[in-house]
Length: 436
Ligand code: HOZ
Image (cartoon, rainbow, N blue to C red; front, side, top):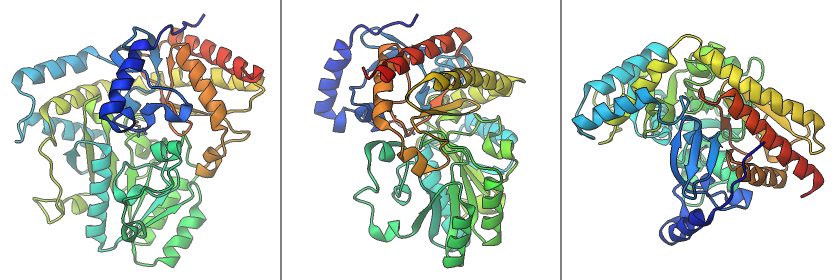
């Protein structure tokens, strides 16, 4: 039996106030719930696998701060680390041992990151990584892939996923055309297109940046040999390969997609998961490249809050726990329980949908056949998705409010939570079939 959310009156009041102080009433577009024709619920608190809104409604949370909360909300060890840090001060703008400890953990778990620079978000990580790639190669062009989202820096807002796909923004006004011209966006999972582009722009491409598993167009997995092909083509043509592992890092395997597929990128970008819910990002890679970053080299990048002591402590606590043996088997089991249950429902549903899943990540695509690229995701029935989402939120399931995002399964989603979630999906899909 699923619970029913009874009231949204306080959320509605807060949203009214928010609309008067913030564009669209939010601080990041997807959470506005605009694309699912709804108002956002405002969250009051969270614990484990749950969040409660300001009206007191409880939700099983499958957003998990977009992947950061892999251990669930308020994990005791993470809270202890933050509390310990709080007693010592919240920001120094000077080096601290905690940032060295987190970097050492990252370096150990992701060995391709021979040197690491901490920043404050995934966006900062990716924009810094391409500046570095341009400096290292003395080239200017960047290749990305349709539907991949690498944060909101100017160079990446070309055929991007996440909020741009959600709101139907093809490319953002305000990005200088001269800069956009330096970004080439190609279909994901299409190696011949990459080969052709390298032929056409010989010696001009500084880097190929990719979400090794796309999470920002919904979940799209790499085809057989795709990531290895990107590695080979980049090496052959003198370009750097950058893995944006903001979503996949410490999730699809402890060492991320690069461990799972055994591919060594030149640079890696990490985000929220290494801060356990506090604002952190990092980029790193081959020593020879990273040595170009200031103050060791001339490529400038800086930040007062970079290496913030609270965030570093929280992140280190999270990464230490993720190293416990069998963690990823457990995450796999939880994900499979939900994904298999959804696939079973797909077999019964009159509204066709596909379930894409990998360790800790799931997307339900309203598509008649498997989705392998952004074009496939864009062809989905977004109206059906909106109706499904509305029914889920009313049943106490906080699913990402966009067809072009991934749901995150955490280590604290219990069998009971997952079964309750499946029951809510069953009811929601049945009402969709009835045309309610
Ligand atoms: N770009 C984030 C996930 N891909 C969504 C951020 C948000 O709207 O909160």
